[in-house]
Length: 292
Figure (tube, rainbow, N blue to C red):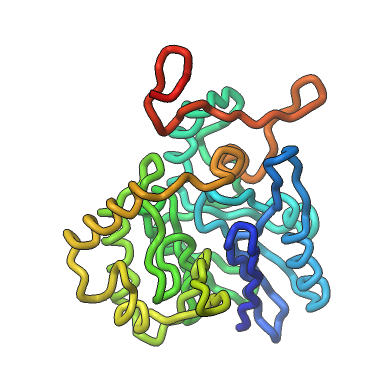
């Protein structure tokens, strides 16, 4: 098995192509559709890099695996579905996320049963992609639907565990939970120390380039937010304090609207498609919608 990473510097996202060199069976994890909010337009530079690699290596892509409904980039899953007839997979608790944000964005068209995805996985489910066996490990905390995918000795952890010198994902989105994140990490920490970890993002300090691979042993020894010796109380205090200081992701509103609908753009109105931008969603406002 080989794992080919792709780093999107605009959103600090890591996309992975996981494939069997002998059979050419493959899956893609967390692809990116580029979006420029100034002018509101999409482009395909990131997903095209993945596409070129797949075609060059003559891979057969069975599935696009979404670790969760991302809040910092639009998914490129639908393009890969069209280009390679790949099926789109996400955690079954996406229904909770859909129900939450349908109300937030007043998305009358949005079904909240997960039917936009080809396969919904629950904790302990497995999926066969040709010769690749994928095990689903539910790891809520960042969102209720977060899923870690175990393929051979590798974990694709999405926004749960980042590089061992960085920490963990944020938990301040609706239905997020630092308490659940702590318990999710403990599930992974019970795996062998040599198990490889591939995070969904990297935010490298100025002292190093981006990285995409660490191990459970390294996380347990060095993770500055949640090592093997960190108590739950200490993690909750640290994670919640840090979350209060974080700004919202730049692409939060467009990303969530598109991603909870399986990567589809909103239905057309007057021949155009419109994304909704709530005002003062995360801060108090007076009756005119002005910040207080």
